Image (cartoon, rainbow over all chains, first blue to last red; front, side, top):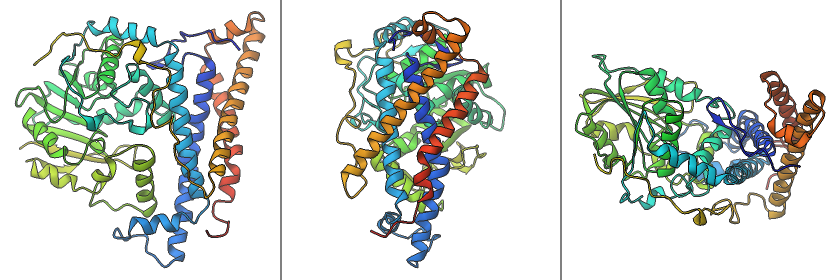
Length: 360
Length: 114
């Protein structure tokens, strides 16, 4: 087979792997993952719940100890099979995705360098910025994590394409969440922040939703904000991206009308979250809205199968902080930071909670 | 605002090896009483992915040959599938995955307890 075809362009806003063989291999994993989530997880949940009931244990008691759930679930043969498949497909996905784009790493880096100074938006990076150790983890098993692989942006982009089973190829999920983001009560939207923006999919959609507003994307990881900026320049959408810490934001008091955060908080150590919330409260103007789509947290009932899955995901898919988050009273932390907390509109992803927190 | 318009600091290409993952390059995880079972499944998944990759390429090749008939390798990499072709390939792929996983689904919970 040929190793040619190293510039296969894009499918809409999605980059193609550099060889057809990579794309076929990764599409196989995408279909495989779809069965794992849509058929095998429900079958596993049913089997595990049947084991619990056979042992005389309740399904609706949140106090049921996790080790008990793990012990009973572990008796069903589908459970280790599901774990094996989930882990293996994730490893295979990253191995092949990174190998594919690494074949053109020089071209990727040249493209990023050419875009660094390009408009219409700006890329702002402090060369003295120090990435905190807590962020330098291989989250989701991604090689180098968010922070340490120079081509991590495009690798993350295609990796999440597989993660979303093809449902976000054209950033459809981000568009849905941005469409659910409502302006503050007075209707004024002059400035919006996408907090923990990764590769800027939400930030770009926010600009399209609020074209007259100044849009910012902030992330701790340089490979993410560089790729986000290059994408926005490629699409000629004016968004500013900055590498900075959510717990130490270089923005003015009351600068933003809306702060948007999609699945950020379960990636943060729980002891960092109060400082982040204090910063969001500071940079929002009175009446401004903090729009959050996130993992579930304490006070929300989770079936035993979901508790089993979240624990698996934390331990075996390198989500080191998600257990701390799901057991925390996140809404209580928001209230303690001074926000008026209410339920937001639910998205098509029923796993996520939706919160609108208003700065009074 | 600080640091405006400065150039990002990047790792040099020499620090950008083909594989840098600690998680995916290490021993990983084992889930069965014998790790051989984990290994066999890993092998089968890799084999299955490769079988699919070859099949997928064959599919593309046949399309390309039918339309052009020359220089297949170059033509395949240059090929841009139609929406209809992608949908057809997706259906075949999903059927293949369903066959592959059928044994695990039909015997989800029938073995003896550990």
